[in-house]
Length: 90
Image 1 (cartoon, rainbow, N blue to C red):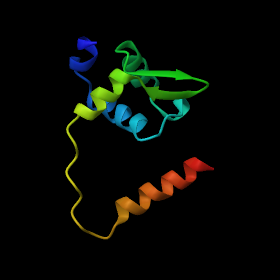
Image 2 (cartoon, rainbow, N blue to C red):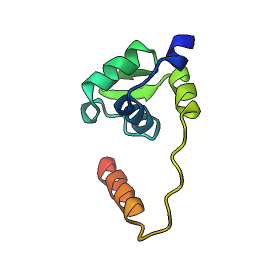
Image 3 (tube, rainbow, N blue to C red):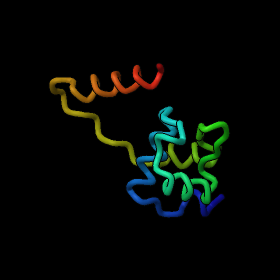
Image 4 (cartoon, helix red, strand yellow):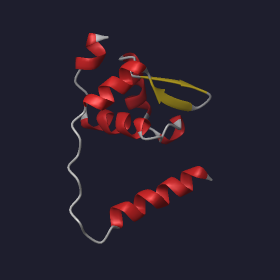
């Protein structure tokens, strides 16, 4: 477990881990190479085409540095995220 919590992740693997943690768990939508690496570290597991964090993966996600809050602007990021979420639900 220590290896899983301390192993370096590439920026792409970190983004994939974050995406899974935030609910984008359809394996077909995620980079195969990233999923393979995260599985080898026992950070994710999957079945029936979905990927989810393991308990260790959840701990690793919680330890990731958080992105700074966006500066107030036109809200484009928020609108894009909501649009993406709605599209994934259908």
